[in-house]
Picture 1 (cartoon, rainbow, N blue to C red):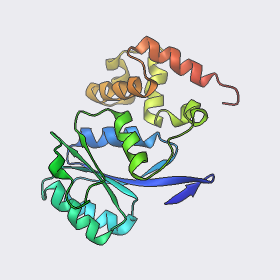
Picture 2 (picture 1 turned 60 degrees about the vertical axis):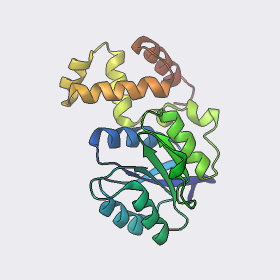
Picture 3 (picture 1 turned 45 degrees about the vertical axis):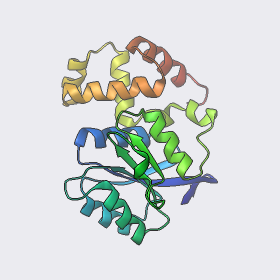
Picture 4 (picture 1 turned 90 degrees about the vertical axis):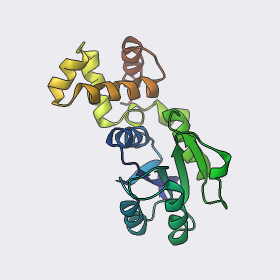
Length: 204
């Protein structure tokens, strides 16, 4: 595990064959001040290659991949990287998933971004970011989310944002959902108010 400003910096690999889910996991973790994305993979083969190349601290793994079962992949990963913490995301987690300490944690597909982030910190025995670190807007939203948030502040609706950024409306909706979750609000108006407060902090 590397260090940044005298604090641990965890390297996390994300594995899922669904592009939207993969994008969401990357978006949630990319805004964390003490987590870096080691890479992404959509298959067991890609995952094995990246673990050998990048040597991440943890991997977030879908239970069902096109070429291998998540449990079997986890077993193979632990053989080449015994230190690796494997977090399995399954449709309906069961206690039986904890086989011979292969898995560090099991989460349901419906879990929140906060739960995933807390789990990453927990399995790596890391302290979550301090209130001061989270108060910095650069640590709250990803660059794309901040870009969308600024357009929301200008009063643009989802279709207008999609046209402006040349992305799909579904992608905009996905990012808006992440923004509301990260800012811990339930409406766009509340998000704007919260974002303005963050951006008005002295020194930013």
